[in-house]
Length: 320
Ligand code: GLN
Image (cartoon, rainbow, N blue to C red; front, side):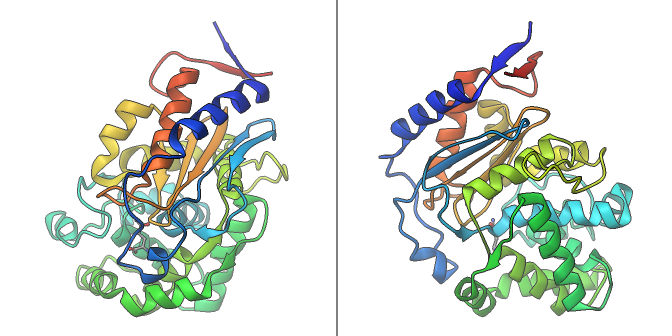
């Protein structure tokens, strides 16, 4: 039997989640990027974008924060759109690493394969694949235009965050050049790394992220603007990547307990996708040891469990 999901039921459940999680003191802001260490830790918001375009939200959903690793999702999609899903599989891969997002050991263990566009190595590799090769300005325009279409409104670069990351991204520099060593970067390594650093420094709101999730949930049709942002048929590929590695070394625990594919960023955001039904985003800066927002995880888990939503079960949902 189909379960009914409507905006008022969701409103009730996300408010419950907000109340239950808002005073949680677990985790700490990312400290390895100085800008992120100084964001007010108490910020907290949850936004849901239903497939029919209704938005349900609570808390700080219009606060602009660093998108960070969630930016790996749109760029992977852009590369699939430009070069086809097979190119991503061939040139980067679709495997979980089971290791931290910035792991160099993962590259060494894979023996020349970045493994997935949703960890740093594969994401730098994905930036290198964005067309047109060699033209940083046009590549950047392609990345930002795609982000705008996916979220349904413009995102802006947080200059201070970009500077902060560029001044401290020594590990990512090593990754870019190690990929070069293995023939797994497809444009200039410094250019590719700079694009990656810039995309991570884009400012986004929880509302925009929920709309991005809604667009993926609707197989490329933005539920707000109704634009076809990417080819129908790519959504299952990106959702499979998100499900496989969205929480890095904690991805299995996350799927086991939440039942929903989701991608995190060290800015404190989480973007979840329930295909055909909704995109969900939550934001709260303090992170656990793997770099995933503590409160945002708790809130999304509360919501999916309370509603009985799970991509692995025989659940079907109708939006009323
Ligand atoms: N820009 C960050 C980095 O490269 C993104 C990491 C993340 O959000 N997990 O370290």
